[in-house]
Image 1 (cartoon, helix red, strand yellow):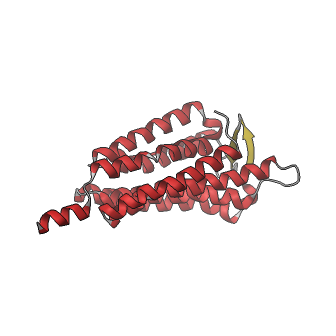
Image 2 (cartoon, rainbow, N blue to C red; image 1 turned 120 degrees about the vertical axis):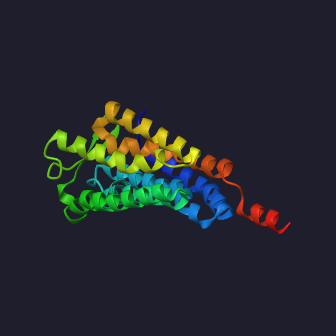
Image 3 (cartoon, rainbow, N blue to C red; image 1 turned 30 degrees about the vertical axis):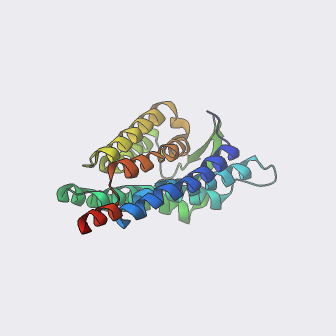
Length: 229
């Protein structure tokens, strides 16, 4: 698949619009589901930021937008390793798993700061280019060797995937397995631009969150009505 500003803007706008359905479901089920329900919205914002980056790259009058890249990488490096385990912990009913996910959330914060702060404070160290129709984000200072980059990717994938596939909720586990497949496919077939391509695929997969909320959890208002009846 070729990626472009149009693909990023269309996917981003569609996800932001679709997030209205998932967020509405969250308000019906309970506010603890809101972080999970917001996945499509934040993925949409992230995709639109990369759309602006595409526009700056394709412009012959400007260099790649550092601001757009920093917004995109904020989500990729810092936000998702924190938000995913946090969201999983909030809906988890098993106390021990909840504690594990909370611990992973703390690890995700540390990992995110390790990945993002060097880019935030030294954006000139970031090398942005096009590789096989996708945006490539390279930081030779943070990843001097390919092995270092692969280890970081593996650790990142564990922080993202363990709270999802380890959830006691069947629907969230299903979403987690989809994410695992996307990571494996991205790692082996799109390693040249893993960050960009995996985030795009994960963004599209986030529509599955609606199924997790709509079909797996009863409406809180309905439960209250039954109890009163």
